[in-house]
Image 1 (cartoon, rainbow, N blue to C red):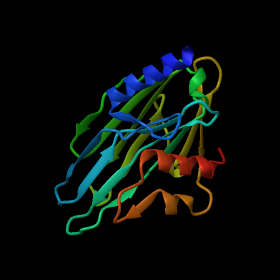
Image 2: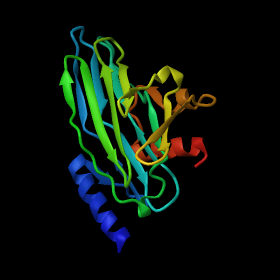
Image 3: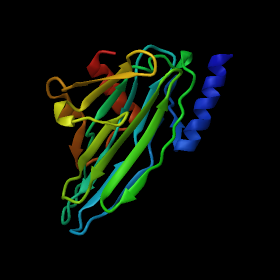
Image 4: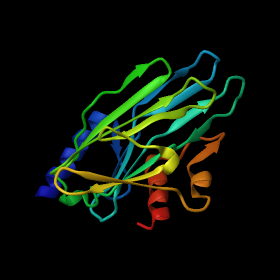
Length: 208
């Protein structure tokens, strides 16, 4: 009964966030709202709100990541890349979870996009935000914060969050091993794979 109610709740949240149900059994993913434009020099950019992949009913973590797509002025090919990946170890089994909820707003300032979300769990609330600076030819991550604390992605674009006592979370950063990030998290001249396929590749790389 609880699982049924949870799936209904996830479905309602999916509609609210522009998400669709994954045709694969048990999964949900959100394509995310897209914010884009052209800067003063004619470079095109597009930044998505946080992409989510929640593998329901098993013991794999939720995968969340940002995605940037751009095309420098005068070029015909797009480039896309995933600047960060967040592995949510607080949400390992959606069937025993009270249901995700989101709050916060997305807002824009000239060529600086602030993307904010709140992840609410049974005993802890995780404030999460990131921003992209799109004033240059290739957009870059301007800020990345968890619970108000800035995270330097130079220390590793692979970020794990896990519980650390009542109402607290622990943040752990890692670098990707081998060439996975270069080969699988960016390309030129083609669109990125769907949210669930990319997230599955990330989970496989992590050994989940």
